[in-house]
Image (tube, rainbow, N blue to C red; front, top):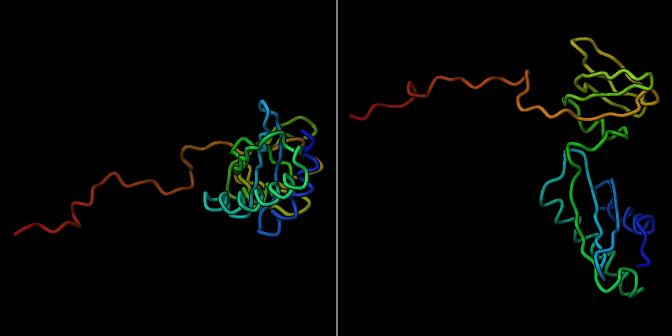
Length: 173
């Protein structure tokens, strides 16, 4: 297997960007006589299943061209797996923070203290969190790690009314 993840990333990244996505991760692992190429892509607004299918075709075309030019690049065959980042992906780039506006996050600071707050905004230099009603600007240089917190119900979402819609139904004659 001659195709390294770094080499494939160089080949795939511009093609993925050309169709509107960010290449977040690419790994290549051997699985017997074949290779498994795992690719993670993202974009503003999130990635749908249709997006995964579109970008899979784009990446597959690039890998097929490489496989034709260098038949031993992947072993006998390769399997391509394309997905979007999971909720457990660390927030390491400004675009990660920007894509999580309104989400609850934990930011671990270089000084060691974790800060939990809701992302209000993010730019190229810092993220602004709502921490217990106060805005707190955290420069990325001060943030060691960031993670999205899984919320099963958000406190700022309207609650469902327990009453039924019986009053809106018409009675049968």
